[in-house]
Length: 495
Image 1 (cartoon, helix red, strand yellow):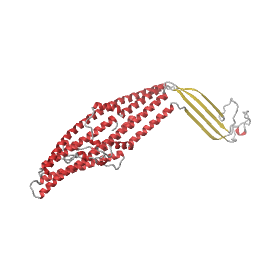
Image 2: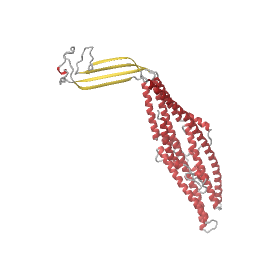
Image 3: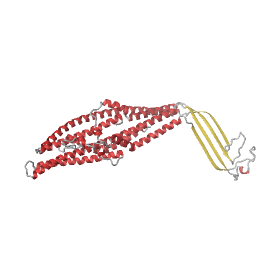
Image 4: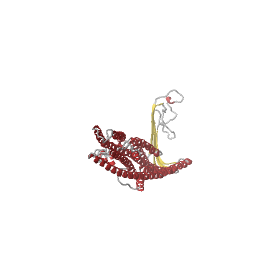
């Protein structure tokens, strides 16, 4: 039990390593581009520009629920090695609990037996006359007489009557430790769930970004085609400079699309590794977790209250603290003796040694005896007992303090996550408004092209503005999605 927090920290480190694999390449660069690089149009993993008559969400998946986030989490829980290790740890403590429960009433029994051969002759010619030794039994001679065997056995049993709470305290401590182990499984499952969510949402965002980049490329290709045809006809409506500008932006969009494809590949690689589904593809993912994010959140204090009741870390540390308290009571009980009913049966038999019938002689080769009685045991290491009590009391107080610290840390963490999610939601709304206006601008440019009027600068600026607004929107949606699901899982523990 002393290693619970070390184990939790170890698995937290493992989850952090998995998060690096997931988060680093999938992080949508679009937010940075939207804040700074206006010329680049959009950024890797979130290049989002759809044609004016297409909504961005239509680019994600097939529109039919496929491999859901719930299924991904179930697969990850089933195939995760850290979860399996945690389950075996739980099984170990359940075994110790069973052992302590049996020890509370099952008698302590011990059986010793052995058989040896040969045994030299030790015999009497007259079993009632101890002076009638046979020649082979004479001491100081090299004659061993007729050899034989010796069989001996001893059975001891003790039934505890009263131990001043030692056995019950040990059972209670084992039950609390098994409970802590069960909550520790939930801790690992929660970390795996958050890793799956981050990979799943990242894959959906990158997949949608690939489609949006393709839509922008289509619009730019159409405009480039018109310019090339006009230049080939010798018309002076467009210049080579117009062509070069659009070619530049078209190349930038292609670069971002390639990066988005790479981000999607890395996210899917992480998702396959977590779920064990080696053939899973991005278009098989159910887009609903990304498309149906809530438009409002609870208050940070409300989320903190939910976390205080549902976080498995708190329950695990509380159970571990109870286990230490029970162990403290066990150590205090060692100040008092143990009482038990005891029984002994023992005997020996040898065919090489005469069974003497004299009751005043002790015959270790041929006998059978037994008895029962009331026994008391008390170790007189009183200073050592008091030192153990002090040490266990310190362990208990340490566990209680760590529980308080964990509650405060989780409360602070959840409140900060709630405030961050609220901030991302506000940014998502603002980016959605900006994208809607950019979409209308791009639609008006498309309408001008349909009637044969096209200004290269307006076309370029409209499409780039739409691409940038979609990049910012998709980046904000990704960050809000990850923040929301992290908040949701860390306060409810489920979908």
